[in-house]
Image (cartoon, rainbow, N blue to C red; front, side, top):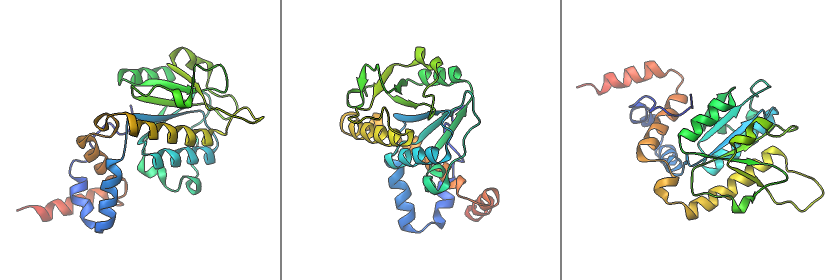
Length: 229
């Protein structure tokens, strides 16, 4: 099951956002308009909480709404709140232990799988195709992507490097990749394809409000009662 594929509580935004000041409310609406599902980030067995937090922070700052954990042989990592700066509270995060079911679900949703490798790649980051929705898969800090991914990957790509080291840290890679791809997509992909639809934006606002309510059920009940004729 992918997170964020529900409409949330249908009237959560309309009711609960009234408690926000105008600046905060407008800011959230503006950010929702900049969100995309066209790109999403997948972390396979990334275990360092600081790396996870930094990846989430880069995704959120780039407007990427959906992030996925796929853990084949490790426990799901915690997120460093200090590094993430609360980004995980604004993202829809899914967790899977079966990579085949995960990848099948993505393919059924029209996504292509792009996996970052240090060598033997058909594409560099700047030439990665963006004509279809894209999932960027990054592997474990030490072992990289598991070999079982190979048959499912549509695009193998690398980030050009000019030093003696073989690869960037996974969180640095995520930042570079997402920034490059979101900038290209904003220029080249039609807005109606790249950004969330009006319906999906409203659903996102509903989810945001429900996540940031301490006593959701009672708050909504009281507000609905007040609005009754």
